Image (cartoon, rainbow, N blue to C red; front, side):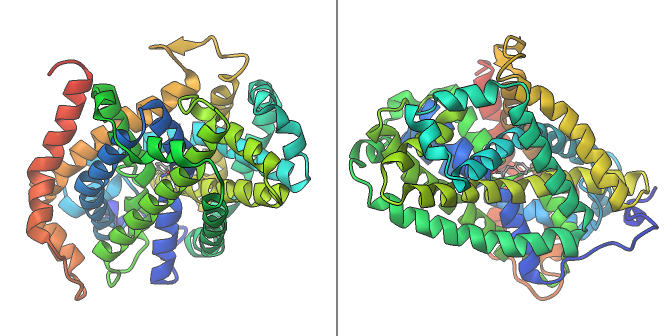
Length: 454
Ligand code: PFF
């Protein structure tokens, strides 16, 4: 099947209704649990502010340039995450990199849906006024909930059903329409929470941990974690931007959109840190306590706070919405691929894909309870899916993508795609230098370093 005909014959290729539609959906993918749930606990495990600085350097040096390139592949290729690689170069060899992204999306959604399900449940708990009372013991009930064999799975499957429904609705009427509603809601909620958090007392120690770097804590594991966090948080090299970019019109500004996505993503992560660390230290919670951090810290804060119940509802709705818009993008990448490759309609591709992912996801959920003893390289199923996707496969796909952009498709062709309808590509020479030399080299060094080879 030629990539250009990859859109199936049952439906013409879909497009975003507006330019803002692409921007909001792409930012919706980037801003998610990675910023609000994963970022704080990885910062906590990696020693604080020094990690944050390295993460920011990776975002600017590697994330932004790759993001520009990844959207260009999609807009130029106008096909799913795999076939777009073939469409822009007329060579099939590099499609495997798109396939890695699709597999990673599958893996991420299988554990992402677990945490999204937790957020969904906590939102409903807060809404029904049950959260504060239940978690007065600062999290023991959370541990009970996630290790239960049934409850978290029910919420996870409910969440999967919602995103399948949205993705079945299509690019404009499903994904775009929901992002147009959910993303502005998310920003309003964020602003409310930041105002609330700056007025908390006892913030000093937490802020120091988050903002004052101590470089003695840096080792190769921390550097790899920072690289992984940059990729995960930006949804980078996963095929999301290829897929979403393929639905955008040639008049859209790729560099402008990429800048906007990075700005929003970093801003939300930093704000999440500013909200969470003061509370973590205030309540004497261990910042390195892992994936539970946000779910344990927040019920504790809301218990003591005036109007705590209201803020609890806002906070968990915020996490739930952020998770939802990212989960939509994860399902869309795999769905678009299945739909175009097997020439079936979206209405069939989305539920079938979602169902298979949900089945794998159940194992990820059970790894907090009955399957907690099943481990590989010291990691449970959940941790392994997270580690392999964020710290191995995404940076690897990013490394291959930089080689593809810099040496195969070539910077001049990327520039031509970006400038097709009168948009400019500022700092093109710097971009091309970073893509050709700096990015592949830095990723390679981080990999070799973490393997103990250098
Ligand atoms: N960027 C999302 C987040 O920060 O929560 C997670 C994610 C979504 C990663 C989509 C990868 C992806 F393809």
